[in-house]
Structure formats: structure tokens, C-alpha cells
Image (tube, rainbow, N blue to C red; front, side, top):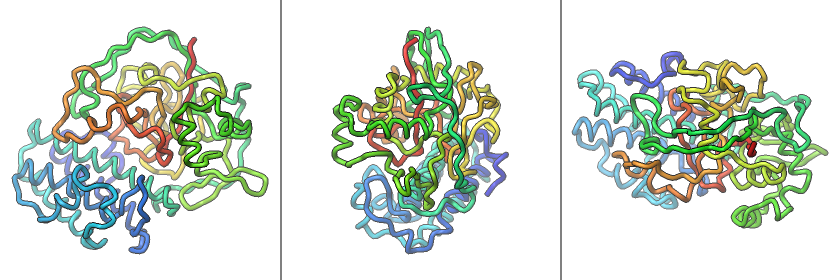
Length: 434
């Protein structure tokens, strides 16, 4: 893959886009290359796609917007729209349509990339072209994280370029009596403006502007830890109906959940599954693979709540990142799937916000209390299916995870999932009124 130091910042020139597209495709293939053809055949689940379909969709999206839309070239595959358009191909049918073989999918992805490099070598990169190159790059970076999520869901090994978790216990950090993080940060509130905060490309759900007047509040300095969440589980948190919303109770009863789905009890202790490995619970690490219902139940148990999207962004500050405008480094944020797990909070975190809120970028996506809605003035982008179909039904998450690409994320970036999704590399931090 391309040297990561050349791909941390969003590209702006044709040469930079050429490097970034090559890097994104190398990362996509690296997430698949160690899987034999038998492992490419995945069971039909609502939260995964067949690997052949997912890879072909990524290539098709790149072909659609760059080679066909910008370059006015004929399709490389006559059946591409019928097979790989996610808006037209129902999820369940992706296991029954005539998909290409693994080799054919790789060849198609390579052919599209070569065409894109040719376009960048000979074409002009005006503002419109730069928009579509950035859209395609962001799309592939997001699907790269989805490939990592699929490997975790299916119990496959961690990607071969990610450092695997250690297997030892470490003592839990000191915590509050309610099981929360050991410290919190006070915010005075006031007027907060959400929306596009930097020049260059932005996804359509960042467009427009939303002004919120916040009351004073307090926010955990770090995400909720595994140790803190285990205290909730051991206090019958999953059995106490008063802690759960109606939607949360319905999800819990339908699934029979008694703890996070990647946890189990054996040999008198709690274990968690990281990809294909069962590890003793690491009390100091952020809890991950919990959904919004589980996060909200924990908050009620601890007499707290999830922060709103506006409170989260207030804590992150107005610069591109909590620490300022300089791009992420490994010291500031755990990103890029350099490791197959989260990092433990550090009171001396160089990526902390000026107020001292740690790990806002990277580590785990963080659930908020805010439904996914458009900002005032929203206008859908050319990729009509990106945001608008998911308004109201999905929940906003912020901050990125250890599997997120560094060039994709920033303090204003909005992720969104259904509140019952627990396959995401997501955790949370809690808040309360001051």
C-alpha cells in the first residue's frame, strides 16, 4: 500500500487523487487477499454482503462516477448496473444473482482503477471533477471499514496488516461509584453551530447549518470502558426493564441478549471476541460492539444519558480535529486499522481537546442521542441514496473508530446506523446536565 504519511490529508490535486485511489484499492484488496475462496462465501445476514458483491460494488461505484459520469466512457460490464447498484439490487437478492467469481471481481476492480488513473493522467481536475473523485474515494474508504466489520462479524482472523490484541489482563482504572469513567469535563454550553466546517469536499448531510443553544453539561473525558460496562451487566442490567426504552426492550427480547453479543462467560470470567480470538475482558479498554439500546440502558443505570450530537461537537471544538487542524498521527488518534482493537485511555492523550476530552477521534464510533436528520438547508448531492433515505430511522454516531481511514474523518463527520446495529466498531460516552 501507499505510504500512509502521503494519504492522511484529503487529496487536492490530480496526482494526489491518483495516489489516494491506488492506496484505497490496495487497502480494499489487502482486506480480502488472505481469504481463500471458501471464506468469500458468506451466509446471508442482514448486516453483511457477499464479498464478491461488495468488492464489485466498490469498483462499479468508481466506474459510474469517474469513468462514465466524468469520462463519458461506455460501461466495462454491460450487467454492472443490474448487479452492483446498491439502490437497485435488494440486499437479499445479492446471494442469488449471478455474481462474478473472486478472480473476475478482482480483475474488474483492477480494470476500473487503471481507467481512473488514465483519466487523472490526461484529464483536467476542475472543481466538479475533484468533487466526484473525493466522493468515490470516501465511498471506498467507508467500504474498507465495512470489510473489517464483516470479518469481525463472521469470526474471521484480523486483517493481516493489523496488530492483534494482547491476551493478558490489566487492572481496571479507578472509576466513579456508578461505574462510569474516572473523570468528566464541564462545558458551559451556549450557541453551537453544526455543519460544514472546512473548505473542500463534504458529504451532503454536513451541508447546511444547524444552530443549537446548549445548556451547561458534563461529558465523560473518555468512552465507557469494558470494566464499567461489565459492572452494568453484573448488576442485572439486561434484565431490568426499567432501564430500557420500549424499542430497547423489544430488541432485547427478540434477540435474547444478556450481554454484548461479542462477550461470553466461561471459566468464571468474561471473555470478548476480537475477530477470531477470544480474549479475557480488558477492563481498561473502551467497550465496543454495543448498540444504541444497550448504551441507553447503561446510561439509565448510571443516572446519566447519551450526549446529543451538538454536545459531542461542542466538546470536539471548532477546528478540523479536537487538537487543531494538523492531520491525525498515531499518537493523536487510533485510526487506519493499524491495530485490531481499541486503545486504552491515557490522561496525557496528545489528541485530546483543549478541554481535556480524550479519544474523540478514532478508537470507537460514539453513539449519540440524536436521530439522523438533515441540517436546515440540506440539498441531496448527486449520490442521492447516500443520506436522504436514512433520515429519522437511523441514529448519529461521531468520531471514527480504529478501523476508519484518517483522511475520511474530522470533527464534523456524521456517521449513521440503525440503533439496533451492534456489529459496528461503536461504543459511547455518557453525559449529564450540569
